[in-house]
Length: 210
Image: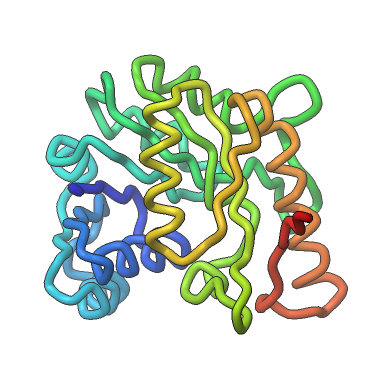
């Protein structure tokens, strides 16, 4: 599958390089093609990745992963150009300064705002409620961390589910895109436990069933 990843920081770089390792063709949309950060990410990608401008990367893939800081998200969507019919997997969280809380919530969500900015894309919220260290390795012994996702388009959610499985997570369809209003606060719970209470980044959520 051809996948564009907007952003090559901790989240975008980890997701993109691991998907490339899994056999997908990944196009990183970045401003600086020659920086050490993107060179390191490409080196981890096993020859299945390329660095391009954001619009060039998006034009080559039916699936786009949005992995930008919240304050850069709207600009990244504008820079992406035509997103009509594309699956847009939104990994962002509308976190305020100093990790003090969400700037969007209760009656809306970052995911819904992304859908409003990318009106013709099929938006799925995923990969937002854990850290990049878990994205690099979501398994704890025989168990896999649960990755919750939501969206309004069944075909787009099926594609997101496949990528979630390819990365080694246990997928859980949490419902329509409005559920992003609840998944984004889950990210704040993870941040508080990992970084404020000092549990560290190697923690993850697990949905238990019986």
